[in-house]
Length: 288
Image (cartoon, rainbow, N blue to C red):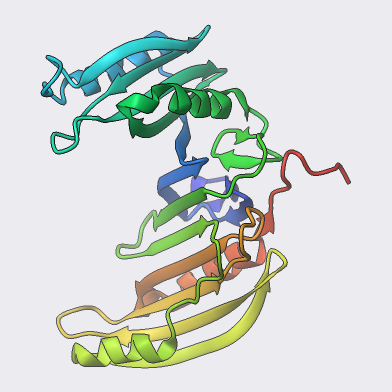
């Protein structure tokens, strides 16, 4: 079986879905409790090599007003968890960033969060808690690619993953979620049409309907857009406004764009991904 015929499952934040082998992940990010967290593949040299790269990257940022390098201090958050405080904001030198790593099998869990110099201890506790809540088995909790964070659901969670087609150019897919304090309306077709036409383009609505995915009733739209000096393209979107203060029902924006001539390919992939969208149970939820 070729790589393009293989189907994969993507787990990101509080959701999972299937993707065909014709697309590849070209970026992803996750944040919980305002701590940016991701799993990093372990190089041949192990955590020592990986951490050495991180230190070199921070040293290359140059001096600050208070230190010879951007590094403020190194520490161990606890046994086996290396961490560095650094400053790279010349306008606000009292704003520091903490980055920490902990080995976990073939990966290292990397977590980062900013904070004021006077609140190092608070930030260190948050980062330590997130790292310690990581498990390599990502079937429950907040997914971070390889594994998941199994702490209590937070009110400040964000996740994003983007894809490109292996063979077709200008083929972009993005899935993004964020917890909200109140529902977030999506872009209306009237506003989008007005924007396109104000730029001298044409806008055609292909689909506009309510559609349930992952048990959430969102709004699905398909449009065809032509703009001056640009190739005509089609765009599919699915938006769920979100439930207040709910990590399990965040605001969701799913979008896919491709040149008009590749509409059939885009629609096939879109249907596969949206139909397979499923929620990931919280780690604290009872087993069923």
